[in-house]
Image (cartoon, rainbow, N blue to C red; front, top):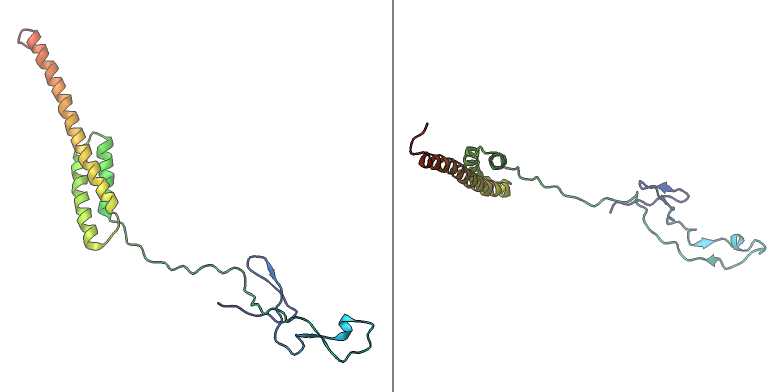
Length: 165
């Protein structure tokens, strides 16, 4: 611990604003107090009056922050970010071919993450799940949509006598 003992009679205001009391240094008169200081009416005494020795505590300059060791964080894979963005766009809009591209980017990102030790595996997995779900949803949606239209047209043709006019 880096500490420093201040000389007698001085004080220091620490970085946190609390004043530190001065600490007694080792000196020959540190443990004795003259008789005249305790008994002003005594003429003299042969035995000095002893007081308890002051506590030798080091004075620190404010509160020390804990030592923090920083480690460099691995970068996030860009393909995983692109895959997640594309599959989100595909899921929200009806542009389902972006889901295919997002799935391709997701698989590429997973292989790059394993090879390079990058971050972003969770984003790549989420992109894959979202991509597959969006592609399946929109393909089924459009098949049902066009199927219903074909069914309505076929029903109209059957009811109308077999001709379209």
